[in-house]
Length: 357
Image (cartoon, rainbow, N blue to C red; front, side):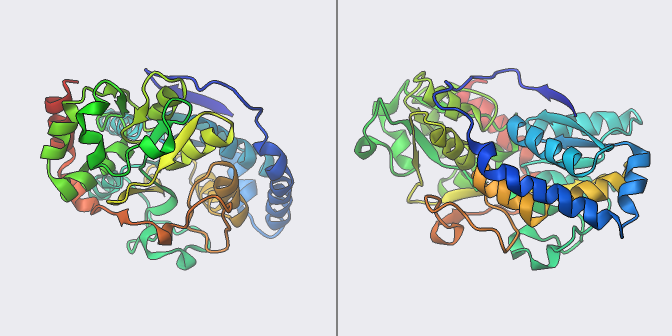
């Protein structure tokens, strides 16, 4: 497995508990490997994929998540390597577009947390039609009527706080609570110029409250980071008390490790980020790409994402930890992919205008 990443600002979470997640999932993954190898007896794709040798995965998933999924695939299909290129969704799109302009065909599978990216890539004919096995059973929000990009995982954007430094009763309960001057100098926010998830969050709140919300939020001088994962790390380290946004699943997983993180599900609604996966139309390893795509949507891998990563997934047979709220119980704020793509530059420009970077 080859990993490349581009994360200019990385805050490390204190390792206050051992990584126990593998223990509960190891047996399941051995089963995945067995199932995959048994299936290969009647499926010619593994042999063809081994001849191709690898699959190149451009992803905005958290690095640890991407590494684990890649490793599981390599265990299930020996002889097929996964080359992981991990960065913020805006950067992986930029890389994909720059390579395309230069005639470079590198990415096989593209996974971004900005659903607007898929609108753009479809228009440019850069994505291939492929429906992963079992996709007909996915919830509507995870399916693509064009049969190209299917939601692989999902998570809401939430507020977080340092549970050692701030009692839960004093934590903000709504997005508008963050506008209170008492939070000046105590907040951290990720950036839509780097994170597709944050672009989704910004548009959702602009649609809810208008741009004036962010103009007021900027007056509280939040610390700026890049990735949607960064606020969790800053809050856990006590550098700022409250995360003005962040990926719920990452916050959940860090809390499970013993880090002092409290999670608030804002009463005025939660922006929902659905991260699709698609195969590029110019893939140099098309069989390996289809095999990898089917693999990441299997029940075993999807159950792993739910159990170990705290993610919501489209597979209907997956169950969730008892301390995770059901998506159906949350007030979700969704955005239109066409609008997100159309307003992408506006979102980045206005954010910089208000926050100064």
